Length: 70
Image 1 (cartoon, one colour):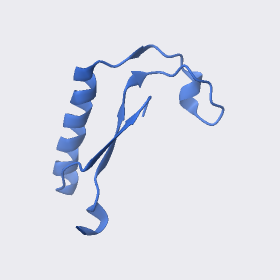
Image 2: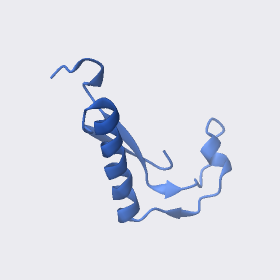
Image 3: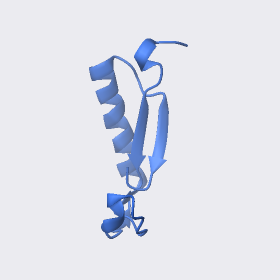
Image 4: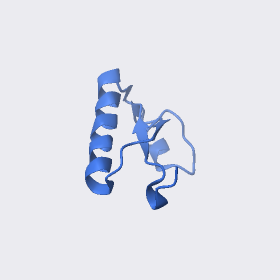
C-alpha cells in the first residue's frame, strides 16, 4: 500500500514515568523512575494518538512502538 507520506502512522507509547538508567545520551536518564504505567494509561495513549492521527492526517495508526518513556 502506498499512501504517499502517510503510508505508515506510528505512535511511540510510553510504558513508564521516568527511567532507572542513566544513559548519557538521553535526557530521560536524568529523571528518576517513578513507576510503570498501568494498562489503562497505556491504552488511553493509543486511543488519543489514533484520534489525533485521524483528525490531523485522515489516517489511522498502523504501528505502535512501546518505549520506556517515549
